[in-house]
Image 1 (cartoon, one colour):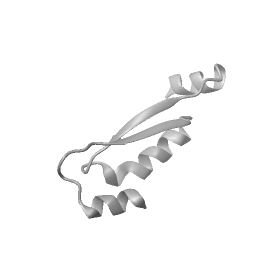
Image 2 (cartoon, helix red, strand yellow):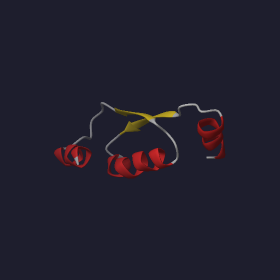
Image 3 (cartoon, rainbow, N blue to C red):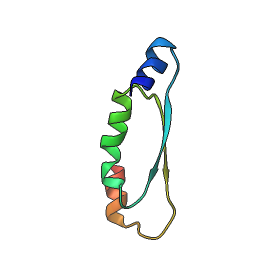
Image 4 (cartoon, rainbow, N blue to C red):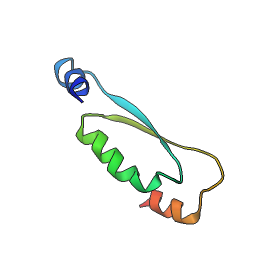
Length: 64
């Protein structure tokens, strides 16, 4: 996290990250994204894995 702070504050650079969403971690998406934003990340890409296991419940969690 010290590196992120140095990169964004001292060097004035944008910080980005990519997160892969899967049925096993979908319930943590909001907290993870908020944590990245609070840590100085301003370019966050979310990608879903396209494998079996997704349910309507997962879609509802992601929606909210």
